[in-house]
Every structure is written in C-alpha cells, then in structure tokens.
Image 1 (cartoon, helix red, strand yellow):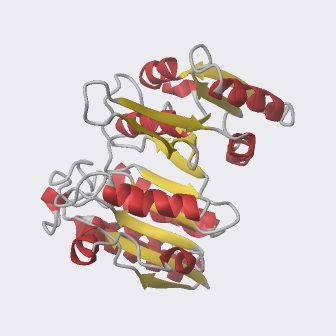
Image 2 (cartoon, helix red, strand yellow; image 1 turned 60 degrees about the vertical axis):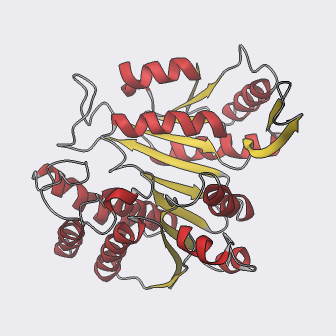
Length: 354
C-alpha cells in the first residue's frame, strides 16, 4: 500500500491534480497495486485565512508518506516568495529532497520551437541539486533602504551535498541506459570556488563509472546547445541556480510548461512530484488547463514508488493520445478538449492496456 499526500494547492492546481489522481487510479487498477491518499490544504487561501504557510507538525506528518503529489503553489493575492519559500522550499529542505529531477522529452505531435528537431533529438534529463547553493538563503542586507545599501547572498556548496547529487546523476544515467553520458553544467572560469568543488567531485566520482562518458559545459554554452544540439545531452548535472534556469529552457524545447513535470527526490525518504507550470490563476475553474504535466508527474511518482509497469502504462497512454492527434496543443484553451477530457482520455488508454 503506497501512502500519498496530496497538496492540490492554488489556482488550477486542484484541477490538474484531479486528473492526475484519475490516471493514478486507472494505473493502480490495471497494474494491480493499492494506494491511499490524504489531502492537505496548504497554499495561498490557507495563508490568507490563517497567516501561516505550514501548520505546526506539517513536515513531520508529510514524512510519514511515501510521496507527495503537488498541484501548484502561487496566489495572486499573496506577495511572491512567501508561499514559495514557506511551503515549497521548506518541504524540499526539511524532507531532504536533494535531487530535482527534470526529464526533458519531446513527444510525437508536440510542437517544438526548434527547427528540424524531433522526438529522436530531445530526450535528456537534468539532475539539479535541490537543497544547497543560493537557495539556502545565506546572506543579508547592510544599510538597507539607503543609497549605500549592500545585499549579499551566498552560494553554499558542501562536499557531501555536491557528491551525492553527482553520484545520483551517474546512477540514473546507468539505469536510463541511453547514451551513457553525464555532463556537468557549471561556470568554472568565473565561479572558481564553488565549481572547483563541483568539478573535482565530478571527476572523482566519474572514475567509479568507467562505462559512462563524463563531459563538461559552461552554463551559457549549455543554454546554446540545448537550442542548437539538444541531441548531444543524455544526463546533465548541475547546481541549484543553474538547474533552475536551464530546466525552464528545457521545458520550452519539449513543448512548453503544459508537458513539463518534475520530481523533488529523496532516494531514501519522501519525495514530491509536481507539474512545473505553476498555478495559472487566470485559467482557474475554466476546464482549459493542460493536465499532461501533472499526469507525467504521476508517471514519475510511480517509477519512484517502484511501480515501473504502471509508470510505463501512463507514458504509453500519453504517447498514444499525442500520436493520434487527440490533443491539438499543449497550450491552455487550445487543446481541442477540456482538462477533464484529457484525464478521461489518458486514464481510458491506461485501462485498455490491461
């Protein structure tokens, strides 16, 4: 029995979560496993009502679950940063979800902005360090609000944190068994302390994986090559900030935020899975938001839970729906069907695979 905490969140989050759960139920029935869910109303509405982002004991409670399925965090009436740091980052750090895993895969019949690039060219994974770097919030202000104001924010990188992220990337590459190449994305020519540590750890870990090719690219070059030659990449490993940036670029080359899913992974604990596109409040309640990213998040969650058969059923159903042209676009309101219709279509295909 898999225990799954569900945080529908804000905006269109509850709508896409509903379709993800619909597909999860179909996968469980078809593949033959059991799961149980519990809902948690963390998000903007709760913050407005109570003034708190997470209640006391929330993190300890979430640790009792095998996985967290998150819809979206972000409310137009809450100042940006409050919910993100008070909920998302707090969960990631407290549950030691030290890997942000972002598959970047172009599916058939999904419009790609890159000329002459197809599904055979765009199939890579970014492994982003998720609990260190600039996101730890180390720093502060001096003379704030004056003409002589100083703001300092430090990137914290530990050997333990860097090495476990790099090792995860090599292990994931070996399991993925595609091009057998891991690329370190950094900026060794400028960030000579942080990425000296990253580069040394990368080279030392790489020696333990003689079957995998180790490569390096500056972050600016990585951005250029994501656009020009995405087929060069298999698994990319990088720090928190660079990972945040290049994965959004990756989402665009795979067809947009409507298809982009991500996992916040603690390999030995509770992991959290979410669509990347955000709460999209202007589409709330209109049944037009694309739920495929949430459904792909369910696929990732199933793989994390060891339900590989069920995960493949979900991905095959997504590929079938797209290959048949049933879903016309990844953009909200342009799919040719409603949010719930997409969920019905994918879950129906999953059940047909029985």
